[in-house]
Length: 303
Image 1 (cartoon, helix red, strand yellow):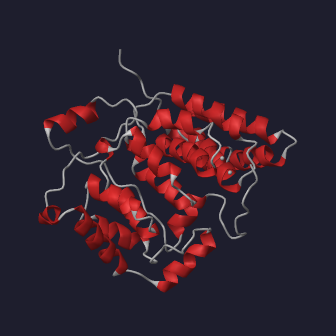
Image 2: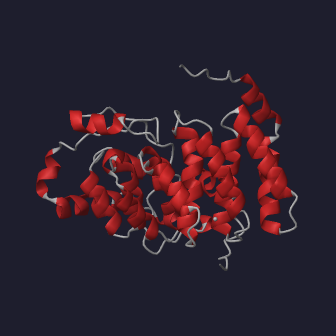
Image 3: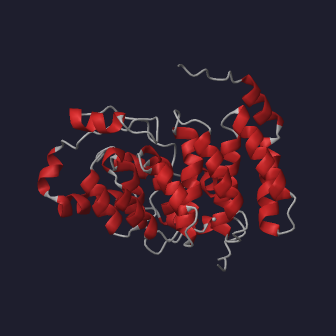
């Protein structure tokens, strides 16, 4: 999906994130919103305009915070290693996920370990800096969205070398920050493969988690989709397709706008935009999607 493309293995699914969810390394559903702790953190969350699911700005209060960040990081990595499986590690290759820095921990076990370290921002950063596959996945699940700043988002996305490390922070962490929409706009025009993919993974995630956003930012997202649809790189074109389908399933008005974009892309001579458009139309025009949208009552805005 969104220079010359690296070819992914034939077995990779058209929606990489769906494939990861079905596999032994699936990330599972994004964590639910959490209650704010502390007046300052609560105010910070309440003034956000980007997302609707307020994250828990809850400081870590366990005794293990007293042992220092290096020791906590080593402890968390050891907890991950305890769940390592060679079968899981070998299976990552089927989904084009590099396993040379992986222990082979299933996402179910990553999430189980995460329960011990929730909302530990410093530990999340330390884990990400290890450059270990499983540690980076854990970092996404334990960080506090209220403490994630734009510089961290740039630092993390800029160090990504695989689609799983691109998508996971987007749909469990970045889309809950007040910087999400600005990063969609900024990353969509970048040339780096996984930075550009991140724009559309984040856009797709916002269709689900930003309950308060009106249609305008998603319509702007459709402009990014159409502009990036000619990017032949596998991981970019798949994310562009994912975002297009996701926007079209948000509501009736966006469905019509997304279908119009998909039709224009499907009519192009170039193979990549044509595939994106045709594949999106198959889902957006399906009886299931049309019926689901028709059953939704339009929301009335107050004021």
